[in-house]
Image 1 (cartoon, helix red, strand yellow):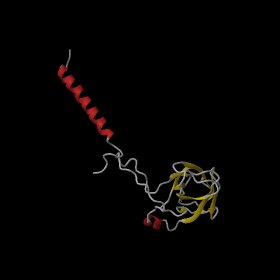
Image 2: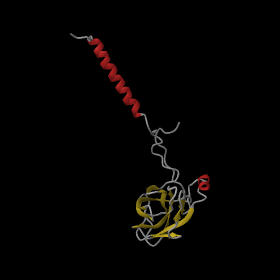
Image 3: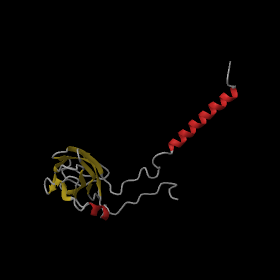
Image 4: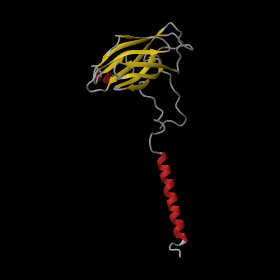
Length: 192
């Protein structure tokens, strides 16, 4: 004996299908907005970390006007290293790369507990953010090129810390604030 008429079963099945389709379509719009999901951060650079050390805005600053910068020149390595430990200091004991030796000045800078180390002039960082980092240590890092350096590539750098250990990061090349900005064409249909 059938307790449900055929029409009621068909209606119930159709209702379930409509709810599932609506849930699927609604789920597609959840998350990032398509126009903002591909935006770059205000300061370009790579990120990484090891142990209690977080590395941010890691980049090579270089004016590459031809196909590549040739060996023999020097470029700046820029980054911010933050010690996230509330109690233990650490020390940056070395940076290596296959594109050339890296010189740190001062050598082996200390990164106090809950402090940051700013390496290079942090171009592109807002003045308010710099004021917040006023207690940060400062250093410079230069790379003496032994291989050509080109735009649109990343180069492996290994950062070694006394306590946190080592981390390798693919570092991009950026021109810095002094270079003219390349304007990107707006995507078709963009704008409001």
